[in-house]
Image 1 (spheres, rainbow, N blue to C red):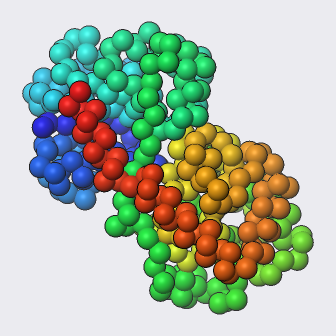
Image 2: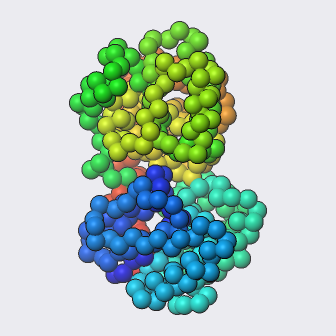
Image 3: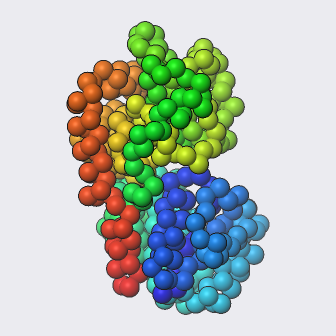
Length: 362
């Protein structure tokens, strides 16, 4: 089978990792795979060099005709059995390209409960008929698309993201390695957050919660944040304003996320909104205790294997972190073991791949 994945970008986000995991697994199964992306630099890519990556250079409205023609030519020349697009700009573009050339099967996947305002939802709705299948990554996110009339009626299905359990698992030696690297004392509790520095991830919520936590004079805690993005300067300024520079380590972009998760006592997701919350499932797979905001599909991921609080509630987030730090080791081990089992049962990549193959065959 020939499969073309089209995605808005290949930055360091959950959707990007999902697409590259899909491409890797489909390639391993003997399918011919290419990835086309619209804009930005490549920060996430598949493992196999023979998976061709094509940049369409859709950087503005003025570049739309050229990018459209580029994708049109790619589809004509490659003649894929399936085009599977991801994220709003790629979804709309592939649908519009179908007006000019046949596409055997077009599947469009949204990755969030919030993919933009009314104009984008209208664009989704008027092009909906051009896709053979529209999906989203959680029941909550799919329902949000129905409520916003981004789809016709209830014509959208949920397909959960899959976690590569060969990459995300608990590593016993990781804690000592990370403590030594960062020169942190062994009696410190490590709190980890992972994600882009943007509005969606709502790091000010986390920083204010961490300030509340520090004011309670709890045991030694260090907050590690892995990621980067357009709001980095604002986050650095907020850390200084809250007098937390000695308690927070900004790690930048990291390639050892499973090790960081294994080393951490608690994983935090402070987001304003999400579609699925991929990093939450990854942390659970690494047997890291999760505290997260109850947004998008995060509750569907966590189940009863972690702590959920409302978004934009620093006091409640601090309370949840405090409680998570206070539970005994036996209880913590039980919760994190159940979390790992939940990921194995519901979000295993192999099961997700099999489901996509069914959709690809129609």
